[in-house]
Image (tube, rainbow, N blue to C red; front, side, top):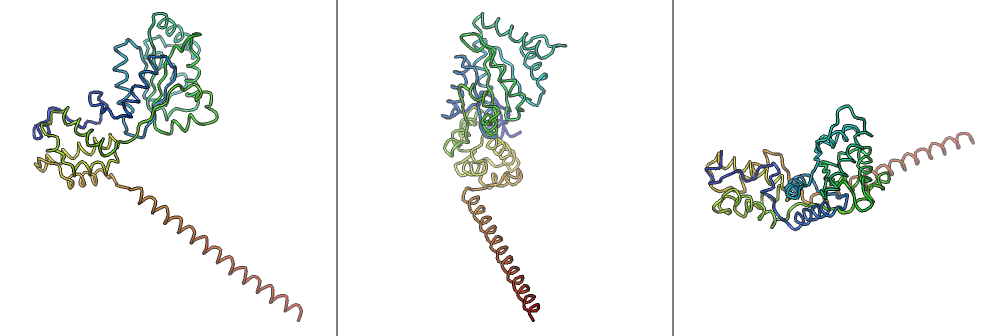
Length: 319
């Protein structure tokens, strides 16, 4: 709708994880390199974590694109809410193995034979689980057992788990300590800085054919985008996509901070600064302290009344 108005060849801020839009920050490059090394060097088990919208799925798509050139077979699970049997059937089915009517132990046997055949041909096999923070402890235990499929030299199945920071919390739990010990590499993605946000938006606009990047999103507008998005790529995309639509509706050749403010209001994207959160926390602590002091004062008054009543009763008995 707005592409011709802004002289763009494609939508620059699509939310779908398109590897051609991968913005190579230091952290994203390190994560992609670590995952690639972990798989190709047959390290066995690699974990990628990051907050919502920081680009984990995009990194996985980019990784799989690189690995396909090396004839790596992979199974990709993006719905981890499965039973152990469904989980094994999904993996085997994704590898093109027969699954109909087979029990879990039969599926493991079929999978092991498949992995051995590929290993003998010098080929790598990979299991990728996205949204892994939703995995139950039961399924994580199944994944641990899959890491036992190995020869005397190396693991037969390479495994990548990607999820939100809650995944780290699960893996740190006592009951999953055996699985945690098998992790060869860990990677983590953070939000972008303001400077990275400027470059991120610029790269996407350039790839989309923008003749002059700063003409569409000037510095003040980018700062507003960063303020509302807190540097989270998915939020940056959502805000910018809506800003371009709003700008087109207004026939505004340049996206202003006011347009960004309006989009943020419509999307209900709030700005909560660290200072604000700290002040709120301090205020709550002060209120709790006041409540405790008031309660202690009330208890003291009740005790004083109780003591006076006892004293009066004692005097009455003595008289």
